Every structure is written in structure tokens, then in C-alpha cells.
Length: 93
Image 1 (spheres, rainbow, N blue to C red):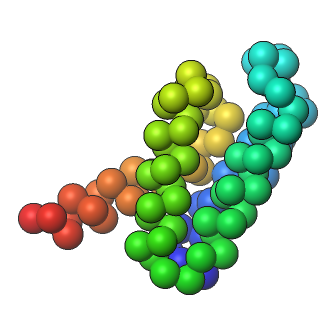
Image 2: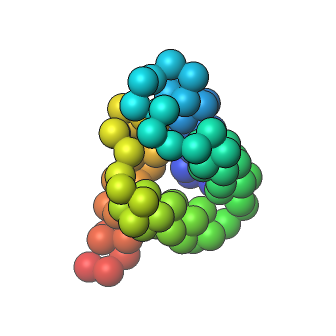
């Protein structure tokens, strides 16, 4: 586990629920949401915080490149992303 594990697991559940309940989800392929959920689960299982941070940042870039999802799709991911950014900023100061 890492400091972001709980947020990432929750985000995985949120994105799958979004897929099932949101009309906005119809614009994306079903497998795409499952891939995101799988990546979130994988990141939640990483033992090193730095590895989890890299995966979170990578996912954020992928999200931006694919035409970002509504933040309501997985709010816990954006909480984790904010935590990563604040942590990295503290390290660089």
C-alpha cells in the first residue's frame, strides 16, 4: 500500500459506476473505462509512494490527452492527483 491507495481504489469504483450510470459515458468505449479502473487498482497496490505518484501523473496526462473526463467521473482520482502535486511541490522547495 501507499499513501494514495484508498483514494485510488475508491476512484476505480467511481469510474465503473460512472460508466454504468452516466449518459456521458456512452461517448467512450466500454473497455476504456475498464482499463482506467485496472490502472487505478494497479497503482493502489504499488508499495513505493514514488511509483504510485508516477502512475497517477501518467494517468492524468492520459486523461488530458484523451479529452478529459468530467471530474465527477472519478473525483477521488483528482483528490489523489492534488495530493501528489502538493507532495512533489513540498519536495522541490
